[in-house]
Length: 453
Image (cartoon, rainbow, N blue to C red; front, side):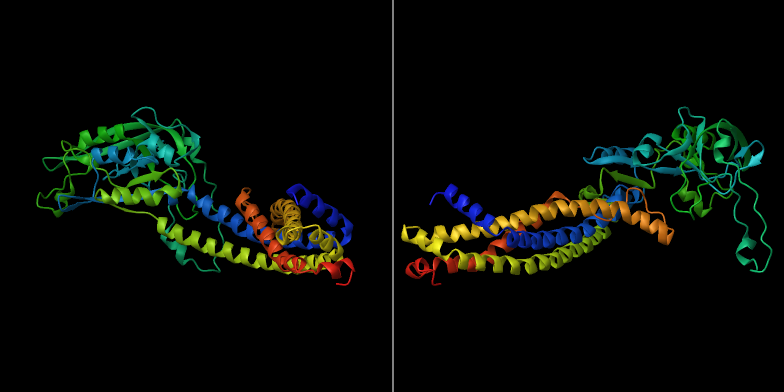
């Protein structure tokens, strides 16, 4: 028999018992949909939790804290090291932060700004790494600065932690927003020591932007962020790197940490920002081979991904059980088909049909049932997935009074999952029809023609 004849024969036979075929396909579709929807929970949670973290600087950042040079460990980077790290493939940015080693008594409109530090940044690199503003713009001149989001909030008083519970609650005064300081002038007093005499030099800077609010509530950003050009001006006044003040006693142990302005600037707090979390491990291994000591949470992320992988495998396994249950219906359907079509089988064998062709016909029929059930199950599962993603946030907000992030997905069906479900459904269907197909090849021609089977 030709292939087209076999397919035509299968279609004709499937049309004879539409009700039984419908129930068998329905059971297969339900099992396939159950598998996909169940496994989609694992994919959805992984994307919402892990993949969301991958875009975070916390995950894509590699902390470089030192390097091995000529058998010695150096805890700082040079401009050449920064240039090398920036030249690596899949590196989005290389950031560093220079913290001023003195408190220049910053004031705005006569009010002392306390609680934070003055930090010099490479704003271009920081912007690529995720540094953002809630108001204003980034500095374009040496005498322009960005202030922290919480710079106008007062420092917590030491007595607040020990307040008695029965004490009357006092209403805290409303804190004006930091953006009101945009355009204001920051007065600085840079201190230096010349011949054991303290001298102060006044500098001014203009506030042009406000950094975005920290994501962690306990982290209060009261810093002042300045351009490296302003840091260079301060260093030229103090004669030291990072504006360090020379101690009165030349024998002070702290003298060893003070570097003169004439020496090249060293970089601390260096972070290599990868283009994605998947590149972190490779970049870390590459720079470690070059002698750079670094740390990232790539290993922890791998463990989280492994947990989700095990979870998804388990869900697929449980979902497969539903398809295996549906296979009982396919087996019964195909067994009944062999019994009902015994005369047709006898006629095919009488006219010379090969047993393999007969077996193929019944395997094709069971395979069609599996594919049809898989197609319906995939369509239904996508509809259920969209319903779950739309309805669950509403239910959580209504009954639990909790707000679900807008981009959070409880269910996600990647194309690979749909293909895997279709393959499992087809495989189970073919295996279910294997035994009835073999029985069809063993039908006796004479008994079949006498309808005595």
